[in-house]
Image (cartoon, rainbow, N blue to C red):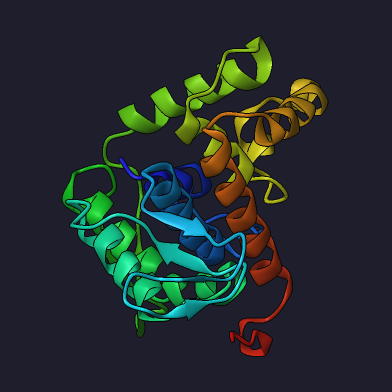
Length: 228
C-alpha cells in the first residue's frame, strides 16, 4: 500500500468515513507522501546545485527532478513523475499541483481494493456527498500496531513508517496513535525518528528537502507560491 494511502487511513474516522477536521492541510501532506515515496524509490531528487538534465534543460538548485527511466508500475506515481518532469520546480511549488484531486483518487483506490467503502449520501436530502467508512480494517490495525511499537517500545521503523511519522508531524498523528498518558514521550520519539537516518544519505537529504517543501506549502497559501 502507498504511504499516502496509509496516511489517509490514519486520519479518516473508520465509522464516520470522514477526515479529522483538525488535520492541517491533509491534501498537501498526501502530495508530500507521494514525493517522499518516489524519493525512497530513487525516482526523484532535489538538485543540490545548478545542473543540466540529459535533454539539455538548465535546472536551478533546489528543484525536484526525475531520476532514472521507465515506469514505476503504479499509475499515480507515473503521473506524478510526468508532472515533475514537465517543469523543474521547488518542492513547495510542486506540492499544491500534485495535491489536486489526489485524495479523491486515493480514496477510490482504497475502496476498489475493499479497504474502504464508498457511501454516497445526500445532506438534508439535497446535497450529494460521499463518506468512506472502513470495510476491512486489518491493514490499518497492523500499521497502528507497528507505529505504536516504534513510538512506545523503541522498535526500529521501516523507511515508510519513518516517513509516515515525519509527514504527520504537526498534524496530530501521535495523538491518533497513542493514549494520552504516553503522548509526551511518543512525540519526542516521533521527532527523533524523523530526524534520524532511516534512508541512505542522498535519499534522506532529498526527503528532508521535500518535507520542508510540504511544510512551506502548508503555511503559505498555494496562490502565493511562485515557481521559477
